[in-house]
Amino acid sequence: MEIIKVVFVIIGTFVGAGLASGQEVYSFFYINGIKGIIGILISSILIGIITYKVLKIVTKKNINNYNEFLKFYIRNNKLKKYTNSLINIFMLISFYIMIAGFGGYLKQEFNLNSLIGSIIFAIICFIILKTDVKGVIKANEILIPILIIIIILIGVINFKYIYIKNINNYF
Image (cartoon, rainbow, N blue to C red; front, side):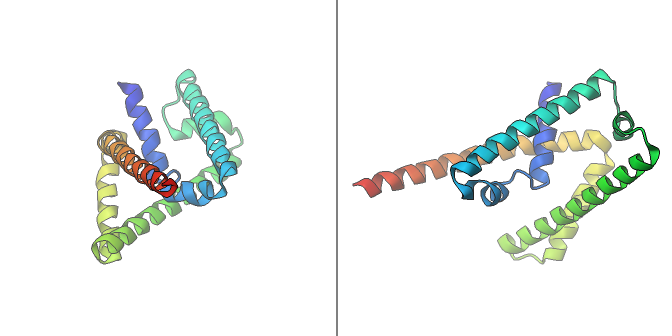
């Protein structure tokens, strides 16, 4: 059961960060036809290998937190500090983008002021992150299965629509 929690957190991380949402996959890969589909496969394989290697190192070396992980890879303290700062800046910018995106989504779908939507999302994130890693894991345990079901349903509906449309075009 623990492996399922890890998988949900990994999926939640990629989807939550916008790295694997439908629009990004379409914009960066699918729009390029067969080359884009090959790109999706290569990217998926690379993400899988990197994730596997990181998890293998973490369990083998009994690494418990991010700082221990950085210490394992970077011996030079100055370079470690610079890398840590760079990653923190990237995560903060990504977080702001997600907050703005949520606010924009609520504006688009429900005509709610985007600032209010962003504040709501920031408060939800604050509450979840206040509970430490356990809260993040619990949120992913709840949200990711729902997300997977919705994606499958949308995929089936789109597949039926495309299939029926193509069949009707031939007759």
